[in-house]
Length: 437
Image (cartoon, rainbow, N blue to C red; front, side, top):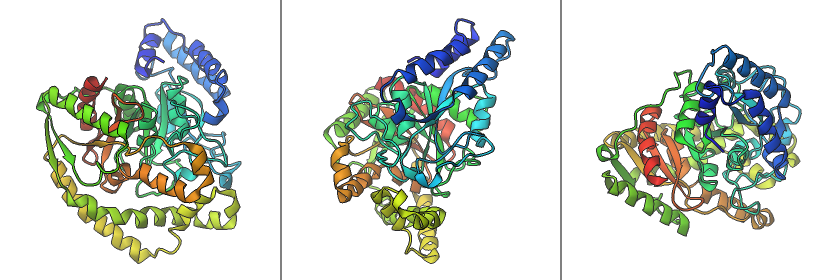
């Protein structure tokens, strides 16, 4: 599929009709045998109305953004007015919001065309993307493989050539994991960089929205629009002016063959391009590691505990158990862990400030087969934590991050920047992307 920016250029120069593009998009979606496992629901009436409005702006030379008239998908935890938004959970079946989420509102004002809402892990609390209570989206490398979560349908909608941009969310890795496992670009924004109004929460202290695409340029344009900024690309920073950091603590442990090979080849490509690369042992990873099992489950249980206890059988047991791990945690334990996290963040970000970015494998493991995980809940939980192992460090550190495809399938390079330096990180990522493809 063409990139969103390329489609936008064709609309702008009059060689592509937004209405015809929307019609072609639905033909592609409805012609895919796995459509129902990717989209929780299609929004054809809304999409065609938006496409017709884009056509009118095209005719009047009044397009609102570089991607005006371009079809996109939305993870089914972003509110859409008058359209069910259920966050992949039977607990929210029939929930219909009155208003669009603010990021949806901004993207709509920029002219994008909402074609549908994509499946996800239940309440966005799994990195595997396996959801037997709703649907499990297909991994691009085979329907028998976990797609990565929780933004599984967002990834599938792009990886299967249906739309150029899928908007997802990332609390512990949920944009980056499915991006890596489906050979896509994922942009994990800094916490607070994008507004959370109208987004169904999981852990409000960590939830972030972000796009999954086939190019970083597309990802940044979408991110900038959702942030309320002018959607212009930053100038790419030359790699021979970049110094990168690799932590030898935890993120290089337990790598699968493709993940190790993809990472090593990416580092070699950056070195050949003139980048300086330093390796350090960073105690902050070891120090922050024990805080995750307190902070994430506590926030998730505070948000959803009452609803889960009222109807526990509506949830897939391993996901329910992960929520319930927060039930016995106290506010004092949470506050102490949060204070410790912020102290460690300061030290980590002081070190990161000396570099352009930190580099790591996005995910340690290849996408696992689904069937064994459904038959062994202990294996499901252990594999889920392995999938999240690398990504969630950087939610705890408060970082912004990218996942970029490497030379190996289902193997991403994670590029990590300081909090609220999303645009700066994009300028570096644009140069990295060129040497990886």
